[in-house]
Structures are given as C-alpha cells and as structure tokens.
Length: 491
Image (cartoon, rainbow, N blue to C red; front, side):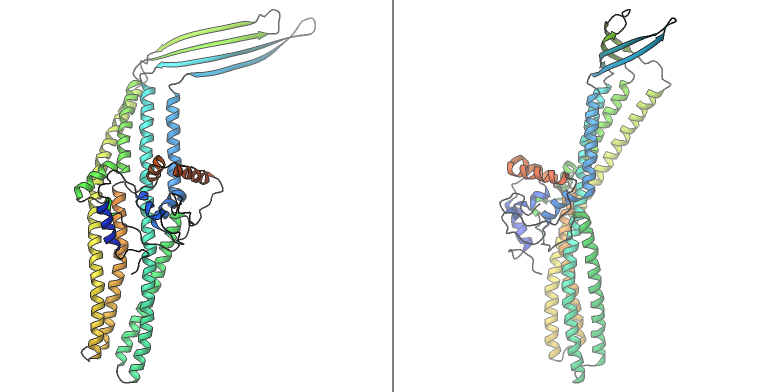
C-alpha cells in the first residue's frame, strides 16, 4: 500500500513527531494538528482530513443549528440583563369631545396629553440578579453543548472519510484479484488441455472468481454508502483522499492520564457543570420570591386643551412602592421545591456523566493501542502471506504442492491485505475517537487559537463568516489555495 506521502513509514514518522513535540503541552485542537503541514505543501487536487473537517464546520446543518441555538441563549441572557434596567416609556393621547348645545351649534373640545414614564425595581429579593447569573451559566452550558455536537459531527466525518478511503483501496485490491483470477482461469484451461491439471482445478478457480466478483460488487456498494455519508456531512462529494497524519503526540502515556484529560476538557461534561451552576442560581431565584419587592417610578405629563374653560396642566409624580407577598396558594413554595428537585437531578446527571466520560476515555485509549497492535500484526501477516504464496508456487513447480494450494495461498494473501486496509482505517478512527472522547476534536477552538495570534488569519475567518452568512451561499467543492494563505488547503 503506497500512501501519498514522502515518508516511507507513516507511523514511524508520526512517532518521531510525537517525540519532537513532547514539550508542547496544553490544550490542542485537532484542526490545528495538521494545519501547519498543509501551509507549505504544494496545492493538490485532493482532499485531506484537515480540509474536510473545516468544510464540515462551515457546511454541516447540524452544527449550524447548534450555533443558532446558541444565539437564542445569548438573547435570553440579554433579556435577563434587561430586567435590571429601568423601564422608560413615552405616552401620548388625543381626544375630541363634541357636545350638542340646546339652542344651536356644537361645542367641540380637543384635549391632548403628552408625557414620559419611568420605573425601576430597586429590590426584587435578588431574583433579577440570580436570573441573570443563571442565564449566563445556561449560555455557557449551551456553548459547550454546541462544541459537543461539533465533536460528534466531526467524528462522524472522520469515519466517513476513512470509510471512503478504505472502500477505494478495497475496490482496487479486489479488481486486481479478479483480473488475476481471470488470467489464471485462462491459464488453467490451457493446462487442462495439456493434461497438467484437472477439472477440479478449473472448478476451484471458477468458484474463487465468482466470489471475487461478488466481493468487488460489495466493495462498490460500501463505497457508495460511505460517499453518501461523506457528502451529507461535508457538503460535496469526496475527491481523491490522502491518508491523514496521525496526531500521536496528543496521546497520553497511561489510561489514567486519558481519564484526567477527559474530565478537564470534555465539552459535554463542561456543559453539565455549567448546568449545575445554573440550577443553583435557579434555586436562589425561587427563594427570592418570598422576599419583598421595592419599585420606584416617576411620571411627567403635559395636557393641552382647546377650550377656554380648560387650562393647560403639567403633572409630575414620584412614587415608592413596597410589596410583600403574603399568600398565593402555595405557588411560590411549589416553584422552590421544583427548582430544588431540578438541581438534585442535574447534580446526579453530572456525576453519571463524569463516570461515563472517564470510562469512555479509558476505552478509547485502549482501543487505540489495540488498533496499533492489530495494524502491526496485519502488516506482518501480509509479509508472511506473500512469502507463503511465493514458496507454494516454487514447490508446485517441483511437484510438492498442488495447484489448489496456490489458490488457497492467494486467498490467504488477499485476506491479509484486506485486513491491513481495514486496520489502517481503524487506527485512524481510533485515535480521532480518543480525541473526541477527551474533547480535543474541534475546529472552532482551533480557529480561535489562530485568530488570537495571527491577524491575517482573523481577516480570512471574518471573510469566511460573511460568506457563510450570505443567503445564496452554497456548499462547494474545496479548491487549491495560495500556500501563503494561512488557511491554504483548509478552506
């Protein structure tokens, strides 16, 4: 299997990169993992995993829906802030009164009134303040929910990418196998005519050929399904796919380190912790309903009348109002009990989620280790199967093996090569599944890191967001970019 890379051994190079970058600690995001490798690369008519992840972030409707939901939460926070502000309104009225006189004629009186009113709640049992803090934590929780959905969609995209890659490799391998069996079928028929082989050898060759053709059709169906999932997630059909880099430098050394990282970074868990805080302030707000409220209000009006009997008036008023609730049938008590129960429910959910996050991080860490070991074994199996086929062919010419033994050896080699392809895909999926399990699989965070340190990138991202917000923007296939552009190959 030849990958599109100048490195002879992908995993050895990735391991060397991991050693060289061991001092680069802190939170790193997967969109940043492969960006620098693309900036200096020559533009190619191919898709790479980094480019695909950025396009998923731009095009996927699920991510856009979560971003819209976050806008709703921001609006709710602004609404909670408004409750702390004074309420000011302008009033205006105009009236016309017609009175029919006894003698004759009609007396018309026009009256106009203009004024301004202002009110401010200066104490509400701390409800407004607690509601504002609660809204801020809900907004924070929503942000991590958005990041969590982003993580899920990106992992699905990684799986679709590798499914397409593996299916194409499998089609190529099975086509070669079909062509080889067709060639052997013709050779077998010739050797039967020469008396070297029997009809049994011919039947065996035909059986394997029919199976190989069926397997080829199955691989084509797998490619069609994987390409459909890819297009649904990314927004365009897959081009030529490059085997991705392996970000092994972000893998911890032990399962315990993996669990610790997951507890610190997993967006779903961070959203749940923010939800815990929001539930605490919801209880405080419900408790504040038992306290009095104090309101201050003022009003200034000006009256204009058309009748000489009426005079223009100017009114000014100021009031201070204290309200103490005494009895409401138990509604406030029920609200308080509901808030406390919701807080307890939220705490239990957070504890359960933390346990699941720890378990999943450990599982994905072990699965990655197992996938690397399986890939190594698969490569050794391919080498051994090639040696077996070569030896069986030599022994068959010497009369020590039958033609059927050659066919069996070829099938063993095919199985080993297919296992190697699947193992390669599983290894990539396993490492990105670990990044997802620990909250490191994200694109939006990577962009923030770039924007913070690169003004040119900030301008490019701002332009991209304007394009994404346009009503006529359509999902498009990625095109090569100038290598001097920080987003070259990524957008």
